[in-house]
Image 1 (cartoon, each protein chain N blue to C red):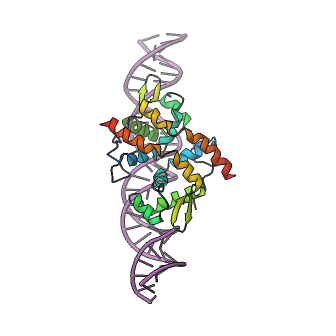
Image 2: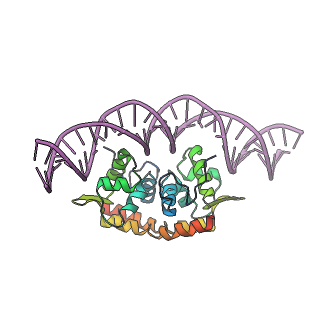
Image 3: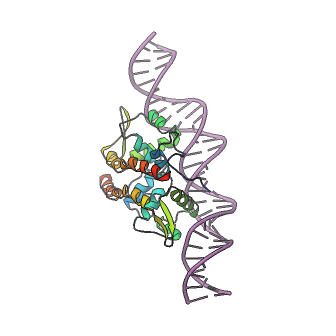
Length: 108
Length: 108
DNA sequence: ATCGTGTGCTACATTTTATGTAGCGTAATG
DNA sequence: CATTACGCTACATAAAATGTAGCACACGAT
């Protein structure tokens, strides 16, 4: 399977700084979206797929593996859910919701 | 050129919610990284390229256009820099630096 | 005036990723 | 059993990123 993403082992950076590993992982398609869609609670893989506008199962599965390998997600009885670490990460993004609305107003 | 990304016009979502447009844009390769590298001040396109581990100029240019079209970047005499809106967006990500360090510790 | 240098940006062939559709094996429920 | 939903995979097609080269333009120095 795909190599687990850890703070030291990254594609998008030669420095190995953890922040680069993080930005690389989060900058892959559907990564942010997945975390976002799980903000209210766990979802089954298929519910998650629906929530993500029917993204192809191939990438979705890849991202889920990566995010799981990074320790942000876990697979439980109720499907995929955020780990404590994953929730902590998501907290950094929740303000984006408000920002996005301000963004729209500014673009009109 | 590539179509400007606005809160209503998105690839990754059918709903048109601004947050989806934002997650889509930020989820494209190098988007987050670009914003991150500009946190300390403007950079010329070539300095930015170097800062981004020599990412190919093709994508970089595409991302710059998109981020500029979204109103997060501007091109001035000293190169590419964050707009006030872009800086506001970046503020949401600055805590990630600390988080990434905690992440590493937890992965050992 | 031209040579060198740095800028923003583009072309294009190759490689890497994502999409879309179908379907697998398993487990729980009727 | 038959159904249903689960997590997950195969694979052909389409889209996006990479890497290398180079363009047109502006500036400053020799």
